[in-house]
Length: 211
Ligand code: 5GP
Image (cartoon, rainbow, N blue to C red; front, side, top):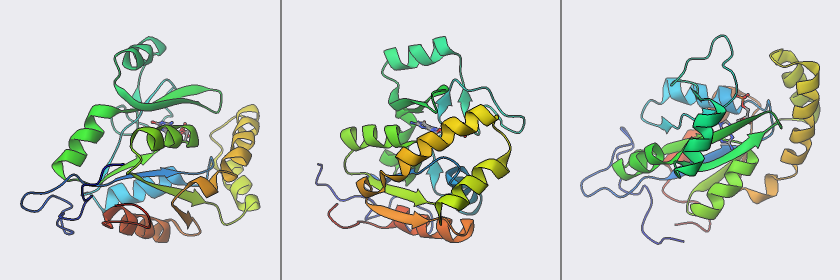
């Protein structure tokens, strides 16, 4: 683990580094499918523009409202293979046995070096990989208020087929059991409150056991 201070000299108003600023802190948000990670991240993007949120690459097809370069970098299988081969991804995983998702490494490192707090919203497999390569990051688990609520949200979203939903619930069962691997849990009872709690963590200079 590195010992240099993280995010301690950032100006809280801008998230930018103060004079002689040190690298900002990386925060990784994970949690079960349909818990609302994307909604919480979108709320942060809107209300706290100083916090940079990584745009993942994925081989999944875009949904009707999704924009290339904003929600994801939608890439072909061949392009994703190339990104892996060229070492461009900080982490990547096959999610819901359906598509590949990965975090482009260079933009994350560049933002942190600029002193800008960065957030990754990724799945559990990806969070575990980041823990290996960047253990100084803080790992936040977004939990549903209850299992029933999680199922309700997944069904209510209506963007997946029945078969896909079944696969996602299977994944969610395993993902819920992983909470103990994380530094902090935030319960997503209200998007705004969850986002506020997460922003506080993203901007905090340190949490228990980490510099
Ligand atoms: P969706 O297809 O609903 O946008 O996202 C499906 C899942 O992929 C979510 O759990 C999301 O957190 C995860 N995901 C999105 N981007 C990445 C990424 O870059 N890496 C990994 N490992 N998972 C990601």
